Every structure is written in C-alpha cells, then in structure tokens.
Image (cartoon, rainbow, N blue to C red; front, side, top):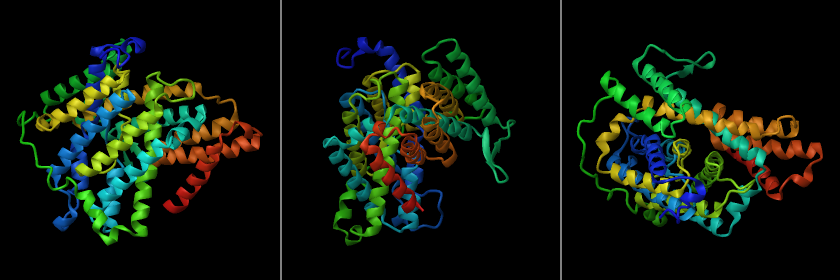
Length: 442
C-alpha cells in the first residue's frame, strides 16, 4: 500500500494521509446537506412535486457519487483530491435549467450524463490534458492564488464576517452575533495551531470549534448517531429516460449540456492545478498524471448523473486536507470512505455548520496565495492577465469567469509585447472560446 501510493517519495505516512482525508471530508461535508436542498428546490414554495427531486434520494446519490469520484481520483490518479457534486453547477441545474427553463429534472440529469461522456472522450484523446499543460505557469499560479482569495471570501461570507451591503456591495457583519464569534474563535485557534507547526491544525481547529459551539448552544448536538438510509430508487437511472424524450433533442438542451461541459472543464482544471501546486506535486509547468486525474473526474460525473445528482467535480476544499498533511491518493480514498459512512451517520453531520468550516477555508486561502510569489510582477504583460485572473474570481464569485478573463488578456499583452513565440497555439483557441463564452453568457 505504501509503495503504491508512494509514501516514501512524497514524505508522508498513514497518519498524515488519514488526517488529511478526514479534514477534506469535514470541509466538504456541507454538500451532503446543501445539494439535496438545492436539487429538491426546498426553498421554493408552491411548486409541483414533479419539479422536485427526492431529497433523500439526492442525499444518498450525493454521498455515493462523492465516494466513487474520490476513490477514482485516489486510486487512478493518486492525487489527494476529493470529488462531490459541485456548488454553482447544482444551482444552475436547479434554478436555471429546471425552475427557469422548465426542463424536467430527468432531462437535466441526461444533460449531465452527456457532458460527462463527452469529457471522457476528450480525456481519452488527450486533448483535455494538452489544454491544461499548454497554460503558462504564470496563469497557473494566478489561478491557484485566485482560488485562494475566492475560498477565503467564501469563508468570511459563510461565517457572517462579510455580509451584503446595498450601498457598497459588501461590508462587515455583526461581530456580536454568536455564530460569527464562534467562527472568529475558530480562526484564532486554527491560526495558533498552524503557527505552532501542527500539521493537523486545521482539523483540530474544526473539532475544537464544533465542541465549543455545542457547549455554548450555538450548534445543536446530534439528535441521534445512526439514521435510516433513504431509498435511491426515485433518482437512480432517471437520466436514461431523457434519451426517449423528444424535448431532450433541442437547441435549449444543447446550451445546457455545453454549460455543464464548460464550467466543469475549467473549474476542474483550476482546482487540479491549485491543489497540486499547494501539495508540491507539480513538475515544472506540467501537472503529472493530468490525464488520469481528468479521466477520474469525468467518470465521476457520469456515475453521479446515473445515481441522480448534478455534475460531480474536483473540490477546492481538498486543499484543506493538503494543508493538514495529505500528499497522496490514499487521502482521497479515506475521504471516499467517510462519504460512504456518512450515509449511515448523517445525524452527526449536523455539527458541521458554516462557523465550523469557515476558519478552514480562510486559513487555506492564506496558504494558497503563496503562489503569488512565483509570478513575475515586474513584467507588465504577465502581471495584467495574472492580476485580472486573481481579482476576478472573488469579485465575480466564479472560478471559471476569473480564468476566462485572464486567458483573454494573456494573448493580447504577450502579442503587443512581441512575445508571440511563447504563446502556445491552444491559448489562441482558448481566447476565442472565452470571448464566445462571454457573448453567449450575456
């Protein structure tokens, strides 16, 4: 086992990988609650039952899809990266495709399935890997740093430290509120532990925060330990029914499939590069085993669609596990195991609230922005696309949009500077694709 996962080469051990895998799971555990709420449109009143996916079935599908995806990533690609149904894509699935467009959720699942199959084909041809390896190192570092800022912003928002302000978009929240104070406490504890050199500082900080939250009544103690496993029958295989529906073969569905395809492609690329860079797994400008990692991600999307959930993708929260010491695919296998166990111990997840996970996201953001030091800021033609990539992610609340903006400006500044020979031909293709992306997005 140690040899297969290259423990000696990576300087790791079972304890670090286990803690890293568990930390990643805890940072991602919210998806087990959020995804069923989103796909079942629980927050939208007065809807026909036919428009709502079954909450229990989606919960089980979410857990199993995350387990399958993480297992594939850990064993096939040997990366400490976990997968689960992606945030943003699930909202697009529920609120845009089903609620706004009026497309049946079964057809929407069919769209996810088709996008996953296309991904597999692109991966097997090597095109997906070539695209990622054609991206200049400066932009890869910018993507890593931008995602760091994005998840830090997300952490502050989840904690209630940063809130909506109609006058200036965002502002400081009410720091006297219990949940906000709990999150601040968690940040302080985690910072102290990390400063003292504890590899598991993020994980320990989450545990301490959860315990303190329960002591002061800010987090409800679990009502029970083990709960009944909901049936998967309402959603399992429903995606295949879409192929027998004539309304599935429309221009509208084509747009839906391409959106699933596009967002997952570049969100996954950004996550893989960012986490691999943080873990020290990048070999110069190349992401080792990129093809295998992308294949695992594609297979996870297909599996998730068949089970009954929106696009399954690589999670940036995996960086919290890397920060806790994870370096090999064994950590992803551990995360997969916890996702499977969560099916039986769902009531325990009630303690993993936003104030508990927010400190982890914030501290991980601190670690990820270290990539800024690798960017040649004195060269304006490099600094502009890198900066726009970084700043656009938190400001547009989209990793994919940040990548798009930076990748549009990179060829422009490099051509004007006379450095055309350094631009990979694929970057020109991406330039056109991203311009069209903004046109059609509008």
